[in-house]
Length: 419
Image (cartoon, rainbow, N blue to C red; front, side, top):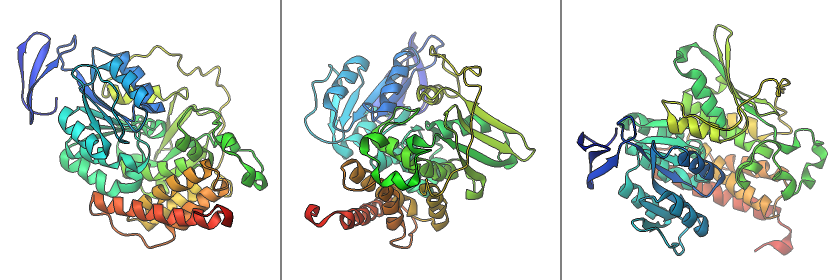
């Protein structure tokens, strides 16, 4: 249990001492204090699935904090169901009507204040984009367990966040299915015995589409992912495989692996979530149906495994599994990831920021599909990388990356559409 000394004032509860005073915490049927959980990005795909898992385990967890960006009514519905101690609407605006006893916070600073007020044991960071950086920083700085679905945190500031976690004794559990798979395959293994890891990716909806038609790809076509149901940005990232590029950087930081020990392979069925190859030639793979509730459930329960009720992976049904090399012409984002690692410094922050802007421009009809990765590469190449010595350094690089990407988007617009 985090936060200080524990006493047992009576059956079914414990008292823990935290900065705000004595907090009475219910115990589960094993006499263990229920874990308090913050779900940030609770109205998105990962956040909603996390709330479904939490609802199945009321005796193990209590929801301390829910945060959403602008979806007021969805936040209100989640608060009514889970009765958190606090909610935050990070995009500002008017807070919805809240259950009695639930405090309301607004804006990015309000999210940090809400975390201070609720002091959750586990923070599921499912915020989209660089907006999730501050919450990851808070969680690690306070020595809590970070359930990381916001891969952008490590892409943009891995060199800052990983030492922060070590300094404060925090734990990072990767919610991304690929990194959760690697985490499970590495458990109990000697890291020195690892030869390489294989990150799998579906290849998105355009795995077999002729390259000379890519400029005609529409928004609706790019949003039709063949195996996963995700938000717009990550779905477009799967189509470009920029999402996989981010995962290369994330794997580098999470598992302390050199770029040469990280491989990407196209796996259309999305059943093998990733693999670890050892020096003796053995390969361990983690398999499962393409359902984010699997890694969410694993990370919430860690170090235990929570029971599930949905249909697991059936090896007879999936008796044909394919693995294909990555075509760099079709997916130029993947080789760009290795270049970013070689450049070092804040290049990852620029990479992520530029992709956020370029993806939004594509979704708005302002860029053709191939220009997403081209615009990101142009931003990465626009200036030499700088070292990240604080979170503010990553935020500054993010701002520069956005500015460079916006300039690229403007250069691609017809003159009659320029602002």
